[in-house]
Length: 89
Image (tube, rainbow, N blue to C red; front, top):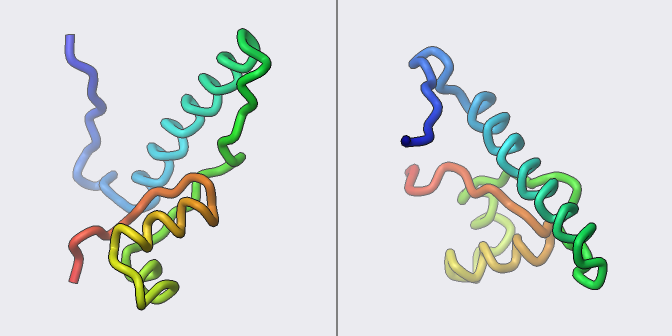
């Protein structure tokens, strides 16, 4: 049985995308807390919320770095990111 979510054309917006990402991230957070309840020596590290950032914003923040290095720096800064507008010119 495949898993999926049907999103109608009129629902395909940035707002819908962000809500879906937040819902998925919430599952990651719950899983992290469950693992912590079983193994208290494994301290939770995920930030409370995921940060949404575009590739253009990353380029503006770190113009001297390669795309991969920009993503690394953003992850260090925010802890969890969702990179948007990949490949948009």
